[in-house]
Length: 207
Image (cartoon, rainbow, N blue to C red; front, side):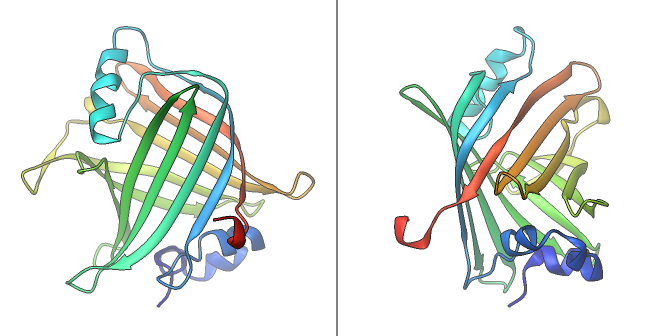
């Protein structure tokens, strides 16, 4: 079983930093647990925060913002009844005594040569994703087309309602950690959500 990220990137996968090659080698035989801290979580004007609060019920959005936020990430691959590989992305942010979640499931659409991301639990938003390796060996991910996922059907969203996401992940050799930066913007509302921070892979015996 090959990682869906190795498949989508093809030969350029080898240009990733070696630690990122290991990081994205997520298969049924290998999951990934990371722990770290977000330097800052920001974005979203006050009038849009109530919508983020509604997202907490679907483990999708949350209204809290702050600095030095403890963070964990868990990736696991499985194969469904149709033989399609699904990769979980479960992210947890700790705001004092509150735990907030940002969950998604990715799958590979080989016919369209793209990865599809289902956000929320149960899923509410769907987006196609583009993957690119930069000159420094970092992973760059950007969203493309987006839909609402309702009653098992994709309902296309107008571009004015898109949450355009840009994700940049790299490995810092000096600090021996992964660096992550996420920005989500809307054409009308501007910056919706962003965070940046660092994390390391948890030791197997500590999981």
